[in-house]
Amino acid sequence: MQSVKQAESIILDSVQPLDQKLDTEVIELSAATGRILANPVKSELDFPHWDNSAMDGYAVRYCDVQSCSAQQPAVLEIIEEIPAGYQPQHTVEQGQAARIFTGACLPKGADTVIMQEQAQREQNRVLILEAPEPHAFVRRRASFYQAGMPLLEPGITLNAPEIAVLAAAQCTQLRVYRRPRVAIISTGNELVTPDQPLQPGQIVDSNQYALATFVAQMGGVPVPLGIVPDQPDVLREKITQAIATADVVLSTGGVSVGDYDYVEQILTSLGAQFQVRSVAVKPGKPLTMATLSSSSERCVLYFGLPGNPAATLVTCWRFVQPAILKLSGLARESWGPTFVQAQTCQELRSGGKRETYLWGQLKLNAGVYQFQLAGGGHNSGNLISLAQTTGLAVLPVGETVVPVGESVQVLQVGSPINS
Ligand code: AMP
Ligand code: MG
Image (tube, rainbow, N blue to C red; front, top):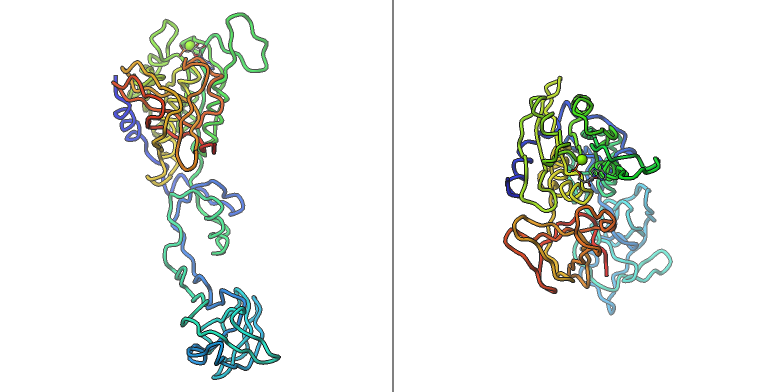
């Protein structure tokens, strides 16, 4: 049995990220939300594109106003009015100024902007009442970004700020990584779909839905392959199909040591290289991870996840999530996992033999993280208590209790709730 740390690094080492050339596609900027940039982006534009004003006021020559005051104002003749989007027509000469508005081009000759609150307008003259700093309120051309320099690096996720930068740089088409395809298989004779009436002993295959959502949230394409009964030949066929079509396969159930647990034996018969067979984690001990090569020589990652819904999600958050994020082309610093220190609102208990993950809510109270244990007990079969989970408190091997108010490490799995 491997430790959590060992399993984590073995799994990550097994992941080969999508290829920067072969596994990419060109998309429109309008469809780029959440995608991962595959190529470095540069712009031929400077930012700002020209010297411009940061204020509504007057564009002046610094030397004309450097020693003025309320008692001895500088008196300047206004030669032009320059709103945003207008190209100045005149040069500001000695003793002159131009009326200017935020974002408008600075006229030739001017090097400083006086905000209108520090000026007094008199018809076609303006009185400057206070000496400014040199270059005050001037945004210099290229002071934010110089044409030709790197603008955005590959491996970043495109969210609102990056999309704004790309739009401003007139980059309307871009190359991004394709989304990883993740096949999902639920194994178990007891499983039915949510629309089927339940017979005694049957339960709904909730894992299929949980995993499809999880995969989509990771930026992947879920490929739901449905429920497979605990029959080796049917399961073998389904797993073969999954390997042929996906980058990653997630199956749930059938990886324990029960009489109906066939996943490991089928993977062996398909020539899988086992990387992880069991992990000292609670819940999730039977976690299995193997690599297989598909017919096109691609390396496919196979995760055999435990069937218990809580164990399924805990192992996904802890082990599958960083693997999918690495695969997807994201830069190293974004693979996670993200841990924070939080104050526990309840006493936390563990058997101490395996690294234990307790689910609940990560909260922010006046800037301090708090962890609220989910109610209803920590049975990994208790699916209901999983709702609203945003954090998993981690009790290391050997630590059997964390008293109320003490600090505990929490794996963040959602946005913390303000309390
Ligand atoms: P297994 O790992 O196959 O022994 O399953 C462990 C437990 O998880 C059993 O109680 C199953 O009924 C339950 N389980 C297995 N697969 C699913 C699934 N897809 N959705 C919900 N519960 C499941
Ligand atoms: Mg089963």
